[in-house]
Image (cartoon, rainbow, N blue to C red; front, side, top):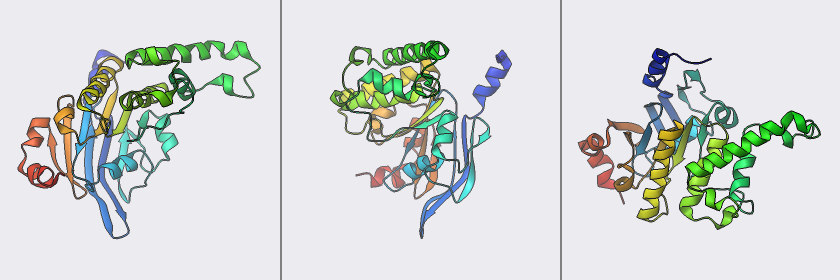
Length: 266
């Protein structure tokens, strides 16, 4: 069913992800003390804060790797609190990790193809019925090629994933997420371990994916000098709570952020 213009405007004005009052403790350690975060669709939102502020714990709770001790999480208006990671991923909310883990010996293209949503030709039941699934397999291949072009990886499609540079591996992870039908991707430090030139390239491609594929991003990043040039909205965390939110320049000039984050940054 197609949305009317008014329905599209309303849907874009509502958060794609809404987390309210999220609490998580490990023994006597309070990692999240009632975190409220909303992410707008087709935007790149960033979480900042010193080590131990709760950023990664928050991503782990939202993506289902940890169950929260309190609060609720909605994705596209649907309750996902406490759901297992695989169910959340199938709904279109996909998590990537700081260290990419592709199939090293498979080609770049093959890594995308095996991540494709619903590959009927790999089923023992459907494999003999080629006519029933050949069109779907062709669609997956064409989607993979479009994603490689979008991420500027098409010239490397036949190269083993293990030969890619650090920046290319980060983009390959995004490509694999796109193949699952992701609507929103959560990333932990996409610029980690990259020199400034490559870090800018990664963010440029993330911005391109956001604009051309209509994707939403929630990113943890410490390379503020680079990331702030690309993100649309920023949340600053410290000691398991959100201490500031807003546009990048607003958050970075907030005295609470200067004291709680910049003042303690290593």
